[in-house]
Length: 253
Length: 253
DNA sequence: CACAAAATCACAAAAATTGTGTTGATCATG
DNA sequence: CATGATCAACACAATTTTTGTGATTTTGTG
Image (cartoon, rainbow over all chains, first blue to last red; front, top):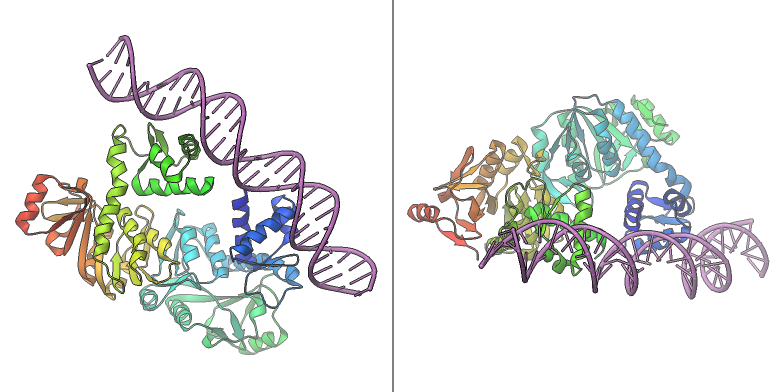
């Protein structure tokens, strides 16, 4: 494996996990820590990450710095566990919708395991991944491209969804509080709603750290979902609220 | 520029032009011909091209082997000349539609020269190219992905177009005979028609070797275009037909 | 403040990429 | 079909890039 490939792989890990561990990377790629240091320096120069003691994180990482290694190391595996559960809801032959977001992207890529399938998405990462897969009919939702979310949104997206139907929609959100799901961007909210409206069932994918948080816009009630999958046990308060509301939570671990 | 980037660039040129010239590549990348030889050898090993005397072609190239250099060398430049002309029709602030096809992809990439722009396309190559360009509002047309054309087609595409309007649409076709334009695929024809219907003006881009040919489906009459751009003087018969029909042809050379 | 872990630095070793000169193959042409 | 010319292949050397090691400095922690 060459330098460039390694750096690309580091970036991939970074978008997936939010952070990487230096020692871990050295082992994984079978190179010295010095080499990893140099890789991270260059990537930092390029502005794609921020070096911190013991590794590196994506820019935003203001908080969790000390314990990130243990918190985030598991996050890649967590997404895999969540997608394991999600995939159980998919049978060959189905039509599946997948929304924006990196967790959704992970799921999207793994949909090949269930082919033949029809996959409908506005997630650019999924389009790239499934474009040339045989056995996958890829229906892209058009729309205005948003670099922030690496996906397409807007009237075009919503209109297209209005005319399509799917067996199941996989939705992910950054915040859930009580019995409600939230998102900070209203365009994104509209796209997710349109997806849910066009799918026979909806399944929510939510990281356990995102419970008991809100964001500007309410997306919908949790009762709208036929399944809710999380990667780890959420806070007790959240559990209580959901139990009271009669919502069934699948904890993947 | 490093080895990998160069090889990637060679592949890009290859998909765009169908063939590449060894000497030309050596000059372009400022390396020795030996280096290019080695690059081509590796790419051939990888199965992405076929080395031939003086350069390389994509697998298919059964015929034009001896004279490809002159035929195709100009073809890259020809597309550039055509896009030069096409770009003259674009002003900053406009909304521009671009269809599928490699010529269209070349034009799409160059649209950044006229930003700010709104670009509407079903061409996957253009989406990739313009995704992260500031000053370009990228509106992707959704649809079912076609690996053959590297673009999206179908009802979703057509419906989306029905609700959008553009100042100008750039259309390319593989065959023109008499006063009519043709294409072999009916899905593609429908998408092109929908684009033309949604644009105030339509501009046809056509390689001069594609005159006096037909394909299964008729797309439309040449009179439907406000401008027709070609890369070189077409056969006399074609010129006559267009002159009689009152169509204005722009020859870019 | 001291200690341990981690980051940085400087230099050497190793690996890769590249250019050149030479030899062998292929082409166009008279 | 012979021949000069052009192009491809090969081998070797030079160069550049990448990597590892140990010494040294910095940083975080108790």
